[in-house]
Image 1 (cartoon, helix red, strand yellow):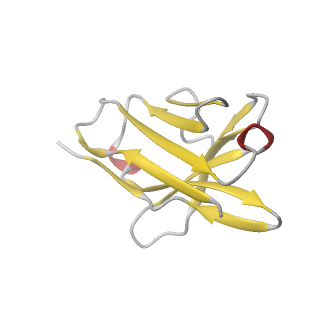
Image 2: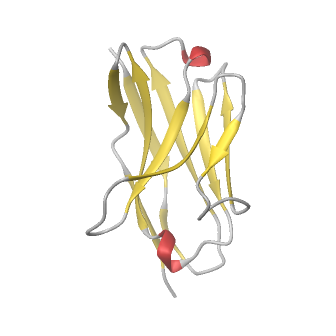
Length: 115
């Protein structure tokens, strides 16, 4: 059974940093692309970025240069490092992967950027 368990998040002032983590179980982690999404109030869930099993990354234009995704294939964990946070980054953040044509999601983590 696939599980994605998230940690991190919280309240931070504009310009601050946060790091989210997502630990996976039930999959051969190193073979899977891991995605980070966010969903702001009243908006659709959007892709923030992802990282392949080999470590190649892609980012949405809105976060490129500020956010960094990394992973450890021994600890089955993926991280989202968020720097220079802006109020518009306020959202619930989810990690995600696809296994056997089905999407699996973490429980979601609230990130609030406010002074």
